[in-house]
Length: 398
View 1 (cartoon, rainbow, N blue to C red):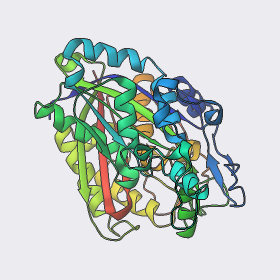
View 2 (cartoon, rainbow, N blue to C red):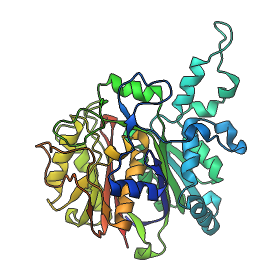
View 3 (tube, helix red, strand yellow):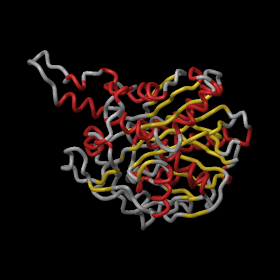
View 4 (cartoon, one colour):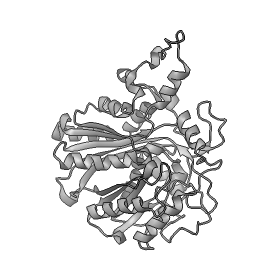
């Protein structure tokens, strides 16, 4: 596929706001996880990656109709790393109607819907949401996409992708297709998911949540740590050829549909997604310098991903999961971990796997626990969701 230029990128997570906060914490091997202290759900014994300051950061008055925790985080992330200036620049080149908005989310603003139901008012049979939450747009999966369109003033195609934990990786593929088909010249892609009761207690009901900080690929891992995050990137038709400093070089998508919440036992879908991403990028597996693994720290997922990686990549690959730093940010995982892959390209920092000390025997030599530093040309990101919904992305440096 023709490479797409990445004009700006950012993430806000439990590690802090913007790229520097992410890079500093990764370099210092400092986790953003804490014991659960979220919004009255402290009775659930787990560790979370919560973004500080959202409770004190209401939306600007002009955007008050979209007020909710998820859109607050989206607004906060939009203000980082010159992202709005980059959006203004592509609008100046192409016009607002030629810039698409493609957002990924798993639960969108369902936290606001939970609150609305707990505060129902009126007589039995005629109970209604309270006036401050009687705003239909925030009770839909498209709440995030519509908010970002309003906040940026963009007028191109606008879509929300909700495919569980692959959501904000698949937005890169969707944007690439829009640009390649001539429906847009540029796109703002990203994803946001925030903590809420449905997330915390839903994953706990699946017996997937650990009572300790998650330890991906560790022999004694006991489950995931949930987190929240928001991130964005600005993609543009690459008229500079190979001179654009950072590029989206390829994507791969698959649906193995093996089970509602478990991956295919041989990692079939994962391998298909990775192979297609490599094929579209026009590179061989041994050219990838860093792979950010999905690596959720659940007993079932990690060994299957490790096996798939070992079958496709040489031992020299540096692959690690960064969920010990940020927690599993669900629909935002794809954009957050793409940002980390782009940081690896730009700064030469290759994160390992935090909190893990005893390797699962299923891990090949590719799975690294320690950080490394070296210049690389290509980096990759895996994001795998429920139902066997898989996405892999390849990024390149000029």
